[in-house]
Image (cartoon, rainbow, N blue to C red):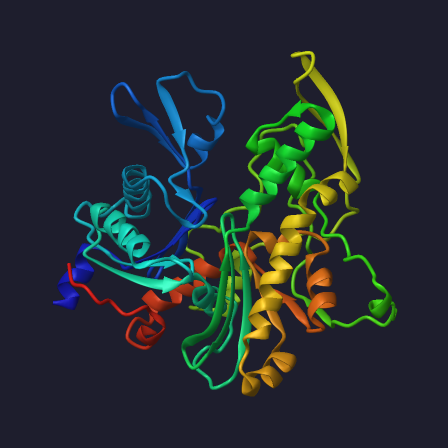
Amino acid sequence: MAFAWALLGHDIAVDLGTANTLVYVRRKGIVLNEPSVIAINLQKNTVVAVGKAAKRMMGRTPPHIATIRPLKDGVIADLDAAERMLRMFIQKAHRSRFLAKPRIVVAVPSGTTSIEQRAVKEAAYEAGARRVHIIEEAMAAAIGAGVKVGEAAGNMVVDIGGGTTEVAIVSMSGVVVATSVRVGGDELDEAIVAYTRKEHALLLGERTAERLKIDLGVARPAPVSARDADPTPKGRHRVGAPIQPDGDEPVVTEEEPGEAPAPRGWNPFRSKARSESAVPAPSPPGPPRTSAPVRRRDLVMGLPKTTTITADQISEAIEDQVQAIIDAVQATLDQCPAELAGDLLDNGIVLTGGGALLRGLPERMGEATGMPIRVVDKPLYSVALGAGRCVERFDAMRDVLLPDWSRR
């Protein structure tokens, strides 16, 4: 029976993120990396576009076309839109398979309720899955980062996504302690929009705020108090990839932010040599930008206006959100069992997700925790690669999946 199902379609792992959706197909690797956006014609109730094409339409559509982000804070906010979007992504991943009925592993935030998990499953079933399994994002990120989660040793992973930040300590194929806070890249963008509106009377869109965050965002060092005046650094930072914004396009351009999508057929679990040849090496870090011009509408005059935004202003705008992430890490460490504390000092903290690309964040986190920080080579792909590992070795990795208490 398993062989018959295999003829109908390869199993799939989906990182259904607030900002981006990644699809990993068994034996093929990551084949899709698209923004989690869908455009719908409200008059005809038809899908106009999904992914990158839909994101380019944001803020530029007539009233009868709505651009929707179906996920909010890591969970499904619009079930119908999520089903349509996921179905189209699966069809893209299975272009040559008319009768594809894949088994799907979906990554969800650690703090999701049973109702929210059921919504994810319903969306996947309606999109054409024959069976749906759930894995926690923190566990998937740890697996994708190369952490040996099956050993009796503590490892800590911090996954900063678009809608949530997942902090977890994993051991023996399970999550020992986890904290999920609804602070991520989207909240950083919203903070930048609010700051420029208040300080410059300038109305920014989501895409411009996101580009400002990528180009100018820096996590500033925490203020030094009297008891922390010792200049000796507390953390040992083992940074695995340059933490720089991708590309040097002007802020006002409409280029897609973040890393370039993984090439079709990229599967690092099959061959290390093949992986290294298929994936381009990260470009060497360049000098960080200190300011950028922004052309948007002045709220006072109602006319287009050009204003220069500096890196210090962006850092000030996102300070509260950065501190919330640090607080979540410290809160998780406070709950760490005594036997695992020594393991964490040796293994350090693994930093993944798009937020790991924020300049200065590993240093800020290491200073706050006194622990070594390691940023994975491809932080945007960690969750998808971890979930993909589960579909590649489903029987061996079954223990890391959440138990399914209900049968469809």
